[in-house]
Length: 179
Image (cartoon, rainbow, N blue to C red; front, side, top):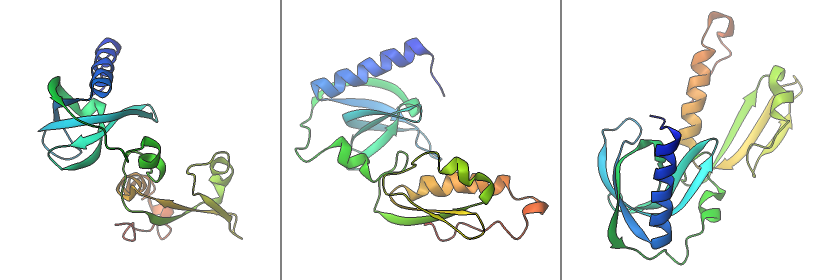
């Protein structure tokens, strides 16, 4: 549900006002694979990552700090309810171990890539904890200490599905190791 520029601009201004004034947002939110639910969110920060806009804040429904995709927010309004930003909250710390938009307990993830894309993968650093290991057969093994394994698992499942052809039979493995 990508929004046009004027609507997105107005939405960003509303969120920024809520952050600056420390006011709770009341919205309907459509989480992945769930029906829309009404939420009250104390917005702590707004964050742009990979072209997507996120709000990080306290969710009154889940009673925890959560990350919300702005494009999944509906019927948004600023309330008169105010909140105090937790003294210990730091956006940098919150995002440090996340991979994508999720934050969870740290997990070591090891992914092996075919030699044909090794050069591409080595052109950039994908995560601060990344360790590269070039293997004898020319393939590349990347190891990360990350949170957000659900997002990794979802992305890898899509990639595996695209390679589930007879020519790749026997080389494609499942993702059972990632919980």
